[in-house]
Amino acid sequence: MREMKDSGIEWIGSIPTHWKTERLQWHITEIKETNKPEKSRQVLSLTNKRGVIPYEEKGAQGNVSKEDYSQYKLAYPGTIVANSMNILIGSVGRCDYFGCVSPVYYVYKPKDGENLEFINYLFQMEQFQKELRRYANGILEIRLRVSSDGILKREMAFPPYAEQMQIVSFLNAKLSHVEQLITNVQTQIEKLKEYRTSLVVEAVTRGLCPCNMKSTEKIEWLSEIPAHWIECRIKNAIFPQEKEILPTDQIITCFRDGEVTLRSKRREDGFTVSFTEHGYHGVDIGDLVIHGMDAFAGAIGCSDSRGKTTPVVHVCNTVGNNRYFMYYLRAMAYGNILMDLSNGVRIRSSDYRNFDRLGVFGIAIPPRDEQDEIAEYLDRKCAQIEQLIAIKQAKIEKLEQYKRSLIYEYVTGKREVM
Image (cartoon, rainbow, N blue to C red; front, side, top):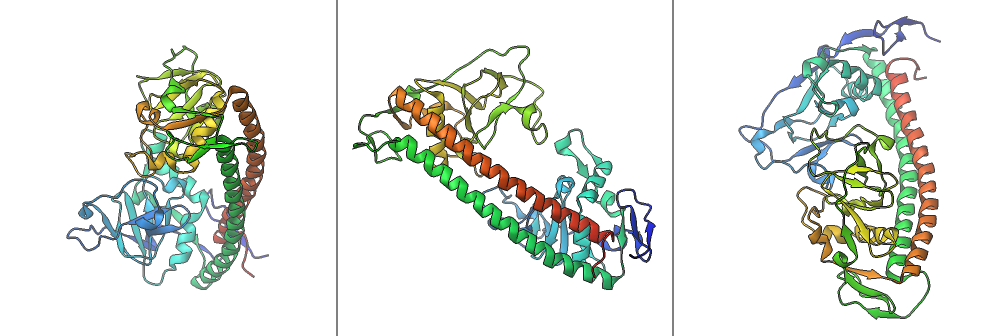
């Protein structure tokens, strides 16, 4: 067991006696180079998991990149890029590309003789990210911003260069193995989700028992349905309601996983705060709730609570079993039908804020008793699948926590590479 000393930094605690505590600014420097005159049109994006990647590799997520490339900063291979507003939640990583990044990003390069990979691991410590919160400014939690000076003046623990190399080599190998385990579990989760999707689509388009089929006339995405089912437009089966708000009502949120519940039951962070409630309407238990912007991603469900919600959310009743119609609309979401039939105002969105846009699509309706059977069957099967998914997600969280603990313990010298 090697000899330790107090680092003098509360969140780091003790470090090996031969390590030094020094400000980050002694090891890295900020690059403040604008893309004017234009040197690159390769837009780079910062991700929590993969670090800095070309924007097009991010997929259809996040904000649309600017067309005026002169507004960007330049980033280079061998640098570290940090989001001034999201570094508190881990939005920082290594860059291996030349390109342009958002003006709210900081770009740091290591000084001569410094180890980029070790410094990157310093930034990846969750404890360091939480420490930066003390130096953040902003009115709202989701708008907290850390200045570059606030980052560079923070003291960190540094071992000799040779030991930094040992730590980096060990962590690279160890974390790669853990990432592979996480990928394997995530693959299992995706297969369960695919199975759930197939169950839902099969049940709401063909029923639970084999039967004669007929060709559809009004349903754009189905060629046939059971012969005894009827077809109509969504507007003739699902009806938006305008319900009064009660003084005791709390905010109801329609999440992308289909849960419709009081926001306070899940989380309060990460939401835009509205100081007025113009257009809000009431929600009762059992109401069918459809998010006008996120329905494409599965934000369709039946509320488990009484409350109020924003005008972008449709609160509906139906001609039959609300949960059957919920599953039918989810089937359209799972098959990208809602996405394909809509023009969203942002990437990965569907714009159904005007219910009439949704109401013109066709829908298949079985008899009421069959609706009840389908809804009960899917409730039971989906609950079983969700339970399995939750178990696997818990495994992933344990592995993620293990990664975080490995980084902290080795980068602060609590554990030694042998």
